[in-house]
Image (cartoon, rainbow, N blue to C red; front, side):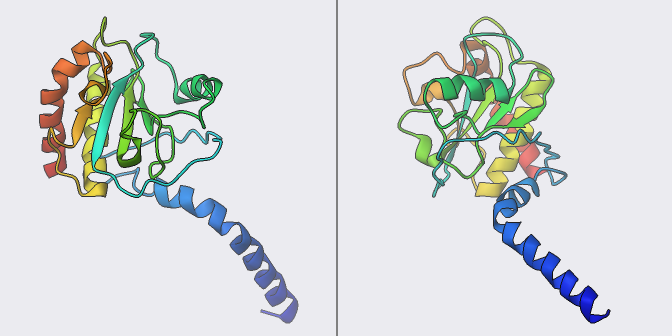
Length: 197
């Protein structure tokens, strides 16, 4: 390599290093999505948030439903709703669509806005639908079990009823809907099976 090529190469490396801190969190978080024991893939949404705060502890996963509609709404749609509420953006960390697609909401290690009084130590997972009147699809349940098993592995949580909760276990709400709430014991068993795989 001649001197000119060397200087050009070093300049390009310095330029790249200047942008590495901004790109690294997304790359680090994305690394767990593909493969692994639970075969989880997350569709990146690249949503823009107002200010967010990092979460220092994670000891529970809270399951939700949209509740006000049974439509197959996206994380981007929920993000718009929550921005309109004056929030930093979507309050959930993950949204599971009717076809089982898992979409990114808030960055995984930030404080959510999904369960009053419990956001500082929890991850929020929302299955779209109104499960007071409808039921989650099989694809949603499969995706939820895989995602929650993976989150339990990441955070070193035992996959049981102490760490996997419905929103109503903490707050006075119908969420995650009676039909889904009635399914939670079976969902937890599914998470345990996937956790051991």
